[in-house]
Length: 296
Image: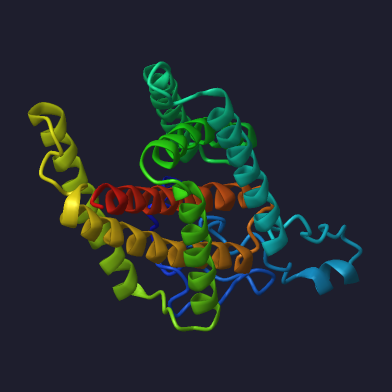
């Protein structure tokens, strides 16, 4: 399985030759078997499997390898995700308070927000292409992304729709909770067809948004109108749906990482990926609210 999140698409906790958990049993702590799709596997099998010669080594007095205890758990993922989102929320609140968006200061605030977004994007790309998680990079990304979100949220909340930021937060939380419940209840089946559909839909969505942005930059106005009016509402809803589907993929990635006994440090990658998806959802909700209120 490959997620939209660059961290998961590169290091995804995948099985079965790139797809998660399809006809493949979890390997963590089990017998050493070939694990072609396991990013943590070694040529001889699962590195976290129990030693099949443990009894023989014990009989001949050979030293025993220590039990693998430093494995990623759901608590680790929750803690790292909470830390990352906490940093993002703090910097968003500070930028909201310290970067006014009145007529006299909005250009400066916009400039800082765009600069922070570019720095955050670079940090996200750097982390995505690293082989191991770097907590400092992930937290720095969250800090700069928070500055961008704080200014954008302030603009929409103060100049377009009062209370828009809180509505977007509530919408994001509601989607997260709904997808988590549906995933745990088995209502969402993450299989090959599901993954293929989500990846194809997201690719088409991103390409359309890029074309619309190019027309807006060089032609002025709203480009092709994909982000304003009725079409903007439609594509905003599509963006929210895609974010929800990617949350399901992210949950599957985390579940597979835990099943394989991934190292605890990999929880930072899981937190990074989930943060990317939640930011996507929040921005889509904020955009939808802005469009709906602009049409009033």
